[in-house]
Image (cartoon, rainbow, N blue to C red; front, side, top):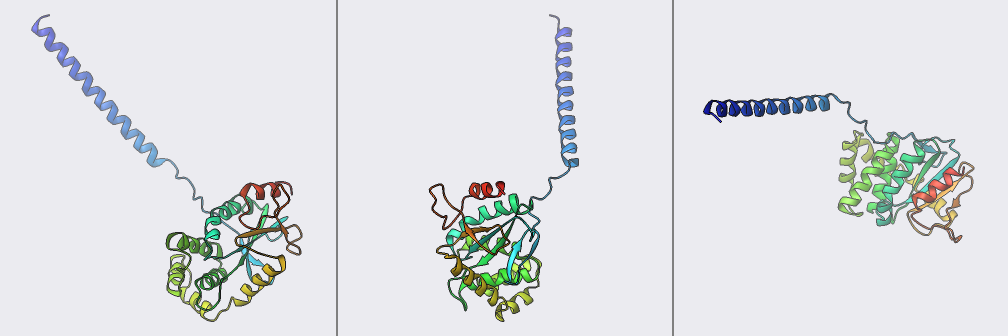
Length: 239
């Protein structure tokens, strides 16, 4: 091979490398442009219809005329309730948002006064007065999971209110005046009527809350706490 041929082949090889590099750069640019112009995925945050269950003052999520009415007896300071929070969110996303069921929240407390469970329950119910029970409910359980169930104080829940774009001063006044105490008493009274033993407990009604029924296991025993998601799904599917 002559020196001229060698030089020509070297130039050709370099030209191929340059062209290949340019093509790669162009491909990367096109990919980036396509990705940047692609529509972003919509938010998966549930949009829940929020109201009140009859005249009890207890929050209601979903359509009031849903054929299945669920009620959760839950305590924001209860470790089991914090663990079950993820299941409740799935129930809301899969069954309440679809209109197949509605969910009543019955707040339980350990003590009143300055007990953290009482402050948290009031914060959730006072947020309900401003139309954001579900948002405060989720935020309170996040505090539990991050800092523990005894972490609720007035400054803590006021900050949560500000984070949720609520009127923090109104929420504080609502808590100090114990405006939601009757609702908590209604929840505790109902818990006694149904024979509640543990939290979190989930019951259901087919007559709009006139009568409440326990979920049962295959052996006929009742679920005293943490009803599995698939058990709830089966009941709703069998409407």
